[in-house]
Image 1: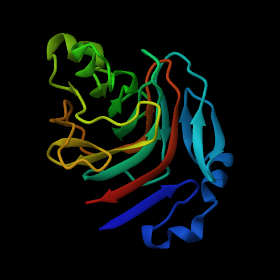
Image 2: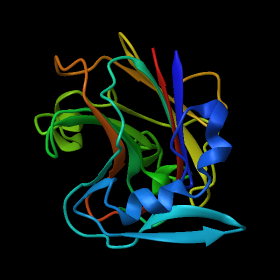
Image 3: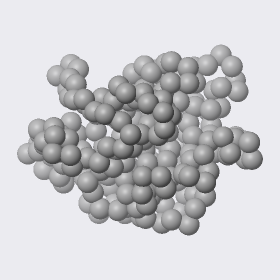
Length: 214
């Protein structure tokens, strides 16, 4: 078992992460992160650097990570969206074949504390692009691939999204023991690229990614 940690510039084996303290900026500057349909900036908050995307353009945004393909494993991302209706969709892409064919699990922070119960059940979503986007899944299999997050985090604050990918895909928020979402994949893809995900007209902030191959 090998754990890889990308933390504000770190790339390497988890136990040796302190040796790679500033490497993320180098990776970004050298275009070793493949960024699709977004523009990046590196910002700092409370002494911690993070990747920030401000161009909320149409279409999905992806940041493919320079790691080997994953079949089964655990992916954890520290990320942040915002509490602005229909303007924040942030998550993880996995089993990617190319820039248009991949699976993803993402959150809609603006629905975390919605007073409308229907909006609350749209807090976390699985999609399998391009065949199974959120609209088709909601119309054909409502409430199966999107759920409410119990005890949700601050919609304007940092939180962790962890995916456990195996026979099923389970998504956990922060340190919660019960998954917010568990689904069966909708495609036969069993391996592929890993990345960060931003939905249509959404930016996002990303502080680190941990990857554990199983």
